[in-house]
Image 1 (cartoon, rainbow, N blue to C red):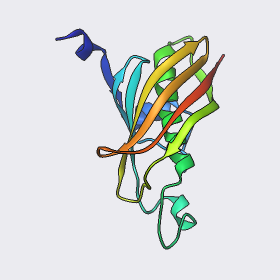
Image 2: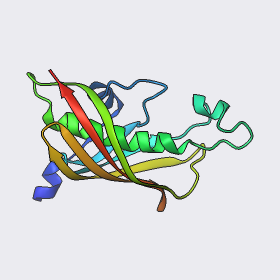
Image 3: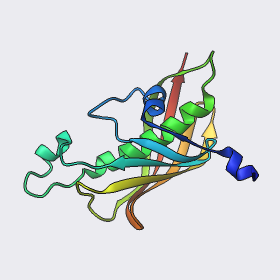
Length: 154
């Protein structure tokens, strides 16, 4: 088995719920695949018509809000940060979104789409982390941003 294959992991919905404080209706990822330590990962969000944001965004043309795409990127990155530092003695109490830079929305996301959040670590200093993210539906880039977060542990 190659070194890379040994480093890859995943997190199903139960593990995501253990890593993040977010809950329905604000949990924006269903699972995380291809986790390479805290360096990169891919988060998955299955967009369905029965999500609460579609009652008002927009009733006759449901479009997944762009800000929730960015939140999905942040949750994906936050989960792998929490997973990376988690030990029996040290657990993350909270993940706080700090920065959003170079954010662009490219195409609308609609019910029935599966969004893949491709996250790559740019930097880390103590409890602060920065990632570059791309949201993709199939091969189509729908949004991108650089995000920063801070982990609070106690």
